[in-house]
Length: 431
Ligand SMILES: Cc1cc2nc3c(=O)[nH]c(=O)nc-3n(C[C@H](O)[C@H](O)[C@H](O)COP(=O)(O)OP(=O)(O)OC[C@H]3O[C@@H](n4cnc5c(N)ncnc54)[C@H](O)[C@@H]3O)c2cc1C
Image (cartoon, rainbow, N blue to C red; front, top):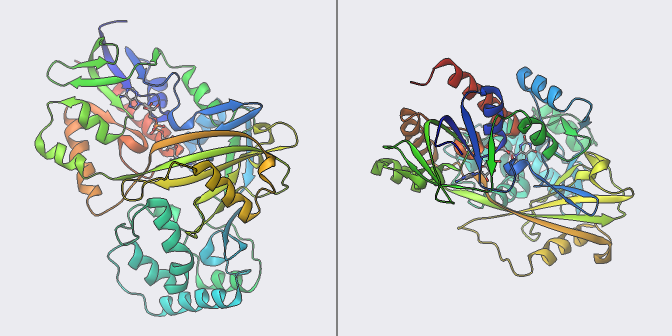
């Protein structure tokens, strides 16, 4: 290995891969795991292709549409979302806030009345919980928004700000809400109404296509130390690499921890960053006919907050006649995961919901622990993130990606940040 590279890419997430692929100058990409891809890797087990939970491409940006189109030419399927909520023992359509049809009548009435009252008297809000109450009212808050978000983020909705919502929380108008309470009004609301997915190879086929044109990659060696004074990285093996500039998709708190010297105010900022993790159990099952793509499960009596059918994204993710199911359970320091018996509890959830008929139908199990899943948007996040990012960028270290920038970003966002970073690197020649 050289002892110096003009640019080092730390981590093989799709953000760094997109940056490295486009940059192509004197550079190397260093990945801790045995292969690149981060959250977008796919595991093959007995004919099933298991992603690290559902990973669908919701594209809005023309550059990314072109990039993905080129990378996955002839290997993309397009789907119209078929997603649901399971609560009160019934399935209702997503988004909950405009589809009360099918709920027990008293619950539907409570939700509808709440929306009407809230819209009459919009109140100012200081956090996500207050925003929900002022936008959708008590019923939607009680039956979906509060329990679901508490489960996903593992903190009270009062702790969350509204900065993360953007396109992720649809705000249908009253007309749509009323229509969706009176009939099964199938309407394509929200950012994820359509999506793309690789026909073959799971989401990792995108990673493989990206990685094919990266100049130089080493896998299986993590970076343990970044010495800013000597502009040098230390790897797990003890090897060292000098660098001019660094692009990192490692989680921001870890980047701070491995860097020396770092001012106290930056360390203090990094200590304020909180996150939730996801335990992902994937199942290869026999039978069960459904066209559903994924299902939100707000009620606390179920462990999972969401599950879905990867074989309905592409039937090539399962052997013929079999079904590929993914499930997600969120946990964190504030809501620890009870690991003992977790597989059985998840399977029991699916049995109670009726998503699987019998334990004997479970043919294959594969599990993933996603240590960093959701950066928690509390009142400290925004300032703490800018303090860290400003510090690193002033030292020619560019954090990218969902955990590098500590945000609620999609694959499209990660790819865009990669392309923008490559452009920035190309513009300024390294001295
Ligand atoms: C539950 C869940 C569901 C999601 N579903 C979707 C979806 O449907 N659609 C969508 O668009 N997005 C989805 N996402 C978001 C998507 O996964 C991310 O936006 C994207 O994968 C982020 O890529 P990244 O480049 O930021 O890095 P990551 O995938 O986080 O990769 C970081 C890489 O850096 C490596 N690394 C870390 N530290 C070191 C070190 N010290 N040395 C060397 N290497 C290191 C890691 O091993 C890893 O390979 C989902 C995310 C989660 C958690």
